[in-house]
Image 1: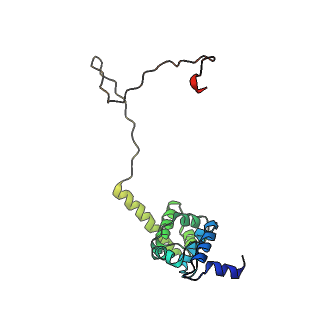
Image 2: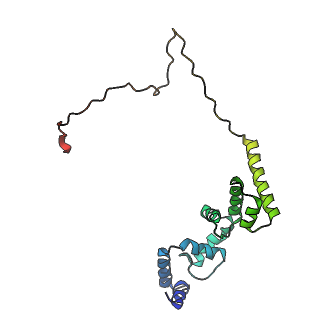
Image 3: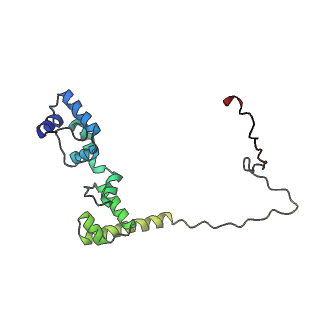
Length: 184
């Protein structure tokens, strides 16, 4: 598509409903639609069709942008992509970095922060885990119980309804020349 044609298609006049519908239809086929929408939201782009949405349709998304928590973006960060993270996504990255055993210098490089700040963030993540374990307790492994033999001479213990084992029945084989009935 030519640059002038792209501008005409993706930046239609506000009341040109046919051009807006055409741009949205093209966006529906686009493989990078979500990336396009993220770019428009992060850069506060007001004009044009981005990610298949007009500015009015993007406004609610933009208003809630600071609260966004998209785990695909967090995964992309760990795969090495340069992703602009929200505060919630950044906190998830820090927590996962602690759990994965990252050192402060690696976190500092990845988040583009100082070594000292990265060390403090990892320490806070460690304290969160420690406080969680202290508050809720660490689950202990279950102990195996010894089975007790029923008392000799007494009545057998009553079992709860529906917990009895089914009786074993021998399987009956069907002869090879047997009729298959109406289904055949």
